[in-house]
Length: 451
Image (cartoon, rainbow, N blue to C red; front, side):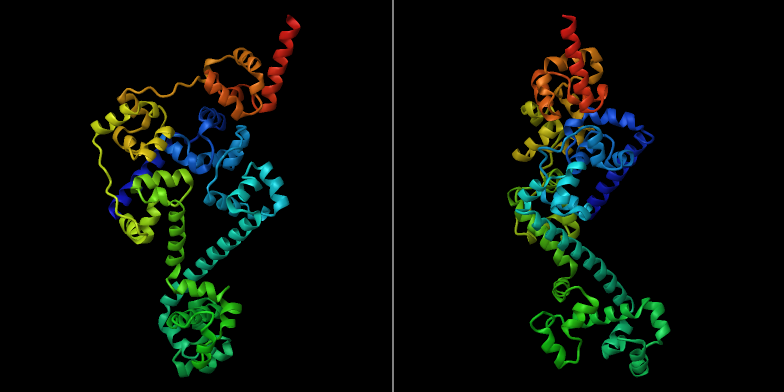
């Protein structure tokens, strides 16, 4: 499994390098032209990340570089956020990025200006906006706590001999005077040497207290610790809480399985929220599903549990064997389901539901999904390109269908049914929605005058 992951990562890195070279120096105008052609597939960052890889399009990094942010790009292209379904993880990620504005009245205005998920979207996912604030605070607190604990654990391991000696008389870590008082008896280095190694006396205390808690973790919990500490002349709970750690409960959780337990529990929770998919999914199928829904991918489960099969076993699922398809087999499957093979996104959904080869399987065999369509002899969905129309033709079409120009979504829905140019075509020629509407209204008025 490890070698496979390394090979996959190497391929991904090579593909990213090629894409960066392909779009290096691309102008903003040219980028807008490309993005407008794919506007119907621009929803969330996770969806674009997958879509852009499949179709060799500009990456998120390039978009952010030219527009400052993904949402700025969507605003400039007049792409609306209405109707977008966000996963809980995506919602929390957005909230964390903009946590300074996470106050109900302020978010209502801020989210509208920056086209972020609304209060309604958060309330639907978390029952109340207050629950979102709590989740963000917990995530931020846990994240900071894990960073601090990583540092303390590494320093403790680095200077374990000193930490062990100091833990015999933990009071020596409280001040320079206490250190000098007990130093010779305990066989500890001089104070100045300690500062060079640990950077501060506070770090010495943290490492010693951490070592004490870890060495006595059987008793290290809220109900037992103070009684045990008094009997063995160890620091009481309030010293852990007030001086060195945010919460004895967090430290207890960390010690009873280290940070890996915390991460595993989060991953388990995600799996059981998506149990119907996970229990029948192969590594590749979960990879597709997780990217589409903004969930941790298979690589993360492999890193945390050791391998994909180990993860499935530990989570209580049977090990799935990945079916290997020959080129002849996947060609036959595509031809038998030609209706769904006309677009990669439609095939991805259909294949997952019916346990058929994924879009990635076709890309691996043919180099790209478009190549697979050509080889198999299936024509992709034909879309009228904006270059096929003059401004006069667009104004005439817009005037004849003016009632559908209320929004991008309404126009595109009608356009797809009636084989009309997309909203993006109008945007490329006329700019923002206000300009499109004004141009068409002026065209209608002029037509009336000439009659």
